[in-house]
Amino acid sequence: MRIGSQLPLLLTSAAIACAAPDQEGTVYGEQLTMTDTTLVSTILTAPDAYLGERVLVQGTVVEVCEMRGCWLELASDREFETLRVKVEDGVIVFPLSARGHHAVVEGVIERIDLTKEQAIEQARHHAEEQGIPFDSTTITGPTVTYQIRGIGAVIAE
Amino acid sequence: MKWRKWNNIIHRDLGYLCVGLTVVYAVSGVAVNHIADWNPSFAIESRTISVDDALARAVGAPEGVRSVLEAVGLPPVFRATFRPDANRVRIFVEDGVVDIDLAAAEATVEVVRARPILREANFLHLNHAKRLWTWLADLYAVALGLLAVTGLFVLKGKKGITGRGAWLTGIGVAVPLLFLWLYL
View 1: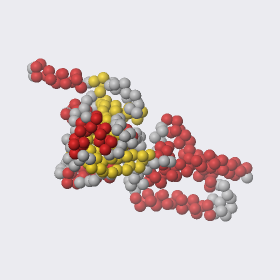
View 2: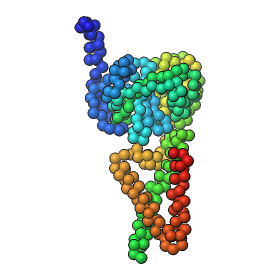
View 3: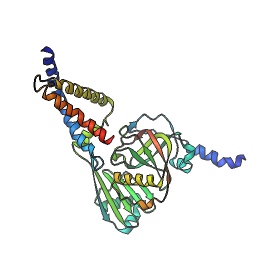
View 4: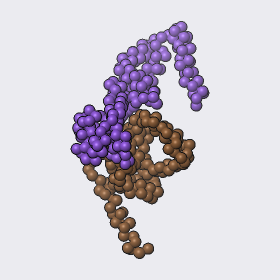
């Protein structure tokens, strides 16, 4: 491969490793250990490349598990896109009041493969948790989703 | 017998010490047991309001967001906005969120309010406080264990552990075992 064809990739790599801002706020779970953030959009563009990797991401919290606080959705830097941060039930509990606040989250990227039946069941569970209508027809086959297994987070107050 | 005197003193005084936390854990226990049916810490109220189509489409700018908030009866102050898709905008306000459906020109206002007493009880019961509270909750658990054991020997005779107490203790042990056999 010629250098010229690698240049966009190199430039992108340089751009995606951003220094984390000094985030002040409430710590959930473990203290953050990483300093360079990766853009959510970069992860979601090629998620398999990040599988099992520990990453630091940041964004606005746009949704929180209403029942247990066991996950949150982080807004991507790209429009109409979010990344879910899942934490162990009871170990880390995100408050509903985190919605709309800026968060920095450290965790490991994981891939969830679901059969159609599993995906329907998960969507039903999600709808129950959030108190929103459930429509099984929106799921037409097996699904693949990516999420962060959250280790620690700092959410601004 | 001297050991029974000390047993009863420990049982009595630990009982007094544990009353406050036992009530907190009992109240929270019932609330959290039904977590599948409700949010035990927060009351979430939702209402949908029609908004002027032009107003809804103005939410791209901060001034437009403030106008929409005023139109749905909220103070014109917001933390952030987010677009889940081309037709929807979510506005984050102090006590909740406002979801604007641009296609339907509707605003769904979701207000979140902490349930008094329950929120605090659940905070302690579910150990959201962490830190030193973890150790205090452990100490409470040990105290409960001591209360249970010393409780067995408070009375002697027919109503004690050699008589009626043995039957009641047996039932108390058998009930969870029965449910384990049924459901596990």
